[in-house]
Length: 108
Image (cartoon, rainbow, N blue to C red; front, side, top):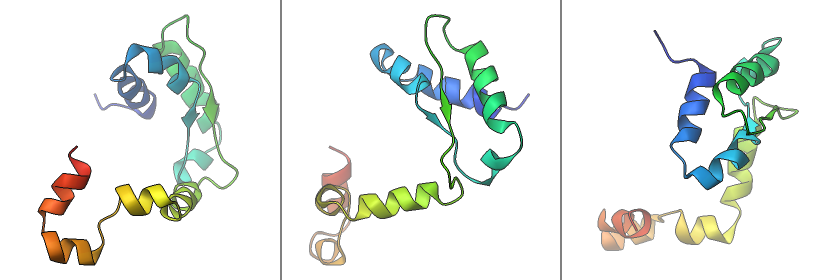
């Protein structure tokens, strides 16, 4: 049997530290074209609710433009200093340090 979206969500949340799990169950965000299927949000909520611990609240959210939401978030992130300084390797950095610059920035 294949893992469905609700099972994948539940599995991902279960991998987090216990103290983070309630927050994540309350902040499930559906994006992409499939989130536009009629009843998708309600179905995901119902199935995740049945899989989640009884004492945890569950909320599923769908942005107004789910198809482009992830892209728009990436655009916003790319404009921050944090992205440029800690999440990005410039060509100049790579030319100077080679692949080791990726290890230095991303493996620590």
